Length: 270
Image 1 (cartoon, rainbow, N blue to C red):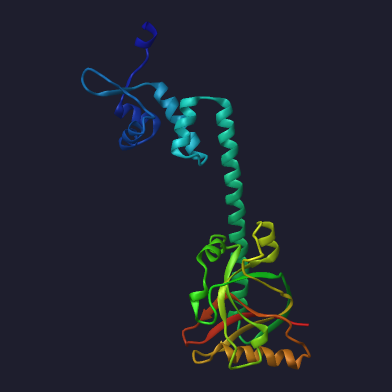
Image 2 (image 1 turned 180 degrees about the vertical axis):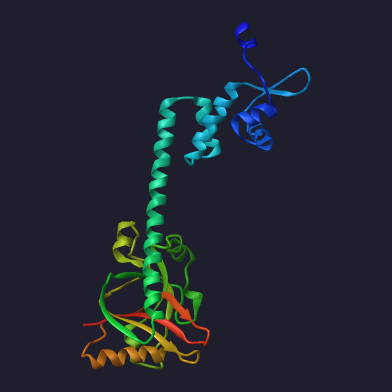
């Protein structure tokens, strides 16, 4: 008891200065029962350096991204094994976050590169080898009643690994009366397999491989997509190539002040 009586007590104002937090924060920490100051006879609350130690541990756990609830639990348990287990859990969460951020950075780089090419002017063609895709249709043409929420939403949740896109079926490419764009979302086939996605009843596999990539940006607001598809088909015929798969449009689309539009189209060829 004598030892306790020698412990220095601090007012809320003094304690606030000691820990570098505003008074309102102290009240919050009292509400969540992290701090339990002693109420003195004069009705003021007093704190000790032990309260500062507890608060510092809590702030340290929070700085590592550990939740308020878990931080409180770790302080209450004060068990080394529990702390190590929770830190390893948080480490795994961060590694997943880093992976997603890296995927977003890669998506930004790819999208920026494609936009710069389209913006540069003229029609540009190049041959690229593109990974096969899994395509989840949200529409048949402009009929979106075929969309299935459970299937489609799973791929939406995986943006930017997946991407919004559209496609034209190979069998309709040369038939102006039948040609239409089906809208949906896609993902690289190898990524879908890596993620363990059941491909037996979800979407369609689009065979890509060797593709003519058409960066088109000279179409005015009145042009229909059939016109720029026909431009690409003429180029293919002129260069003795043959369309061997569905035409794929990624989500990149530009509109300029004059109403002109830009697109990127991938056409599997041989």
